[in-house]
Length: 169
Image (cartoon, rainbow, N blue to C red; front, top):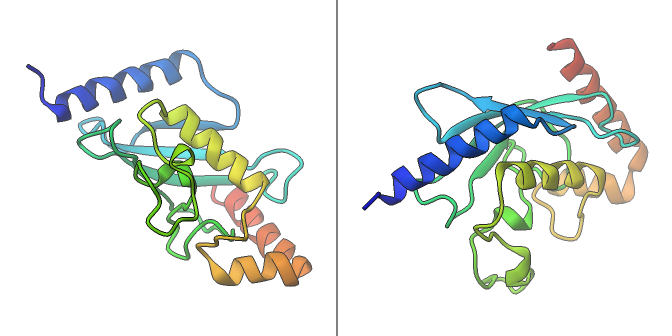
């Protein structure tokens, strides 16, 4: 019988192969190191008609050994200014939270991680997050305050990180 880690490895290899065969607009993904299927490098292209439009944002997606029963973690390695991204780059969206009831009572269990999610659905959720910040439950309090109270400052900071991401190419 296959171990949980080997089942996770096979599933991740399949998802990698599927993405290579059928690329999805808005991002690219691959392994950080060919010997470790549990760590992926993802580049997200800033969604059109958003403040992040034209940016290229790198992130590391780290999968647990029991994937898909538990969610991966996603951390931007590119600079990011967004209410739902912690200052250290970690992404905070519902589908990346462990399955089950929210101990804080903020999210429904149906909004949290389920094993049906794939790399594609995770990244598409992050792209959606860039398009529509949720400032009611922020990971970055300062970015959320700017988003709510000083929108011009927020836009200026995002334009700067978009330019910076373009210069890194």
